[in-house]
Image (tube, rainbow, N blue to C red; front, side, top):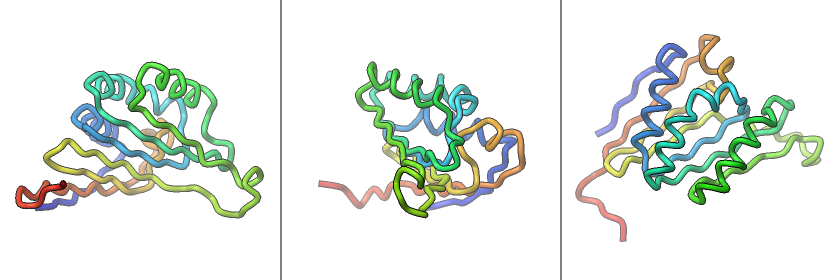
Length: 149
């Protein structure tokens, strides 16, 4: 069974941190990452990693919006938690292409259900919590009759 709801900046931080705390496997792809956004999820992220969860994040460097403090934080965290994977998608000047990396996707899998949040919210306090943005989470319960081998 699946469900859909609309998120706004009023409930976004709570949904993201709860998703992180409960997830066994998290994937995030955002165009912009700022330390102000990292601070909001920091405790939930560390709790999740402490429990052995996997965490993967891909951030964009286009428009020079992602800040170095957030990148350094994740690189330092990766020294302690090997299940954290962190990637940057370079800006178009360095890539010699006009393609811009601009997703806002959050995916959480807690073993029983998967939640995907797709919308307009980056992992920044300004882009996720100070202006009105909308995102749509999709919840899919794991089918007990389908197994992976």
